[in-house]
Every structure is written in structure tokens, then in C-alpha cells.
Length: 143
Image (cartoon, rainbow, N blue to C red; front, side, top):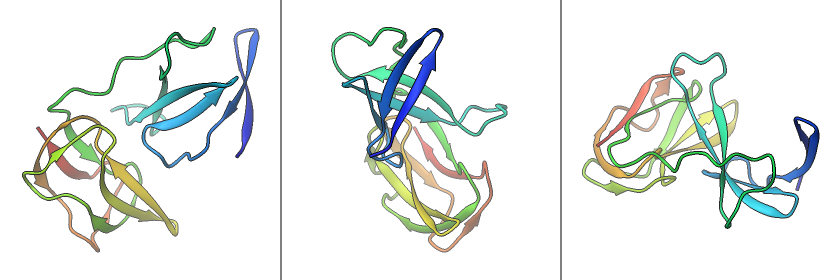
């Protein structure tokens, strides 16, 4: 498992990330486990924004806990990168929870799980297996 040295201000931390494809991402910071919630931010220069969320009581020094996962009715799920839809794991009317896999998007010969950003009901599926999608294209509507 890769270990990274992360410096925040004048303090350094050792960070391990067992599976960066997992959502939410699990990070171990100086022995403490945290969730890293990765969400696309509209209009941002970078495609994702990472914010730490404490899993255990109390946060490590220098880590600011973020807000909890998006509430029910989280809205639109868009493609985080261009690729091909390999499979869809839900259907219209399904109840989904934060982090649940919705589909697999193949990009650059890698399968990327696309996960729910909040809890709710699948109102619409805008793609089908085999479809090519572009960055930012609407995949699912969750209400």
C-alpha cells in the first residue's frame, strides 16, 4: 500500500490510501482512519475536490472535518471523465445510498465505478451499456 508524506502548514503526516477507487476513499493518517469524499465541483479548474471526514472520534491535528455526505435528493450524477459505460448496477425506482455503485465507466483501459453522491431514488438513467460519454455528461438523476 503506497504511503505519502503530506505537509499541511508546518506539520507533516504519513498517509496511506489502500484503494483510491473506493468511494468514499479510505485514508489512514498517522494511524487514524479517515474518509475522503471526492466530488466534482461545478466550474472548478480541477475535476475533483478532496475533503477529509473523520471516521473515528476526534480529528487528527491539522485536519478539518468536512460536512457529511450529500443528503437525499442529491440531484445529478455526471461523468467525471470521458469513457464508455460498461455496466449499470441500478434501475429507475431503486433506492440508493451514499457511495453505492451506480455504473462502471471504462476509461483508458481502467474500470471506474461511478457512485452515488447522496441517498435517494433513481429518477432517470440517461445512458446505457456501451454508450460513449464525455466529461460532465449527465448519467443519472437522483431525487
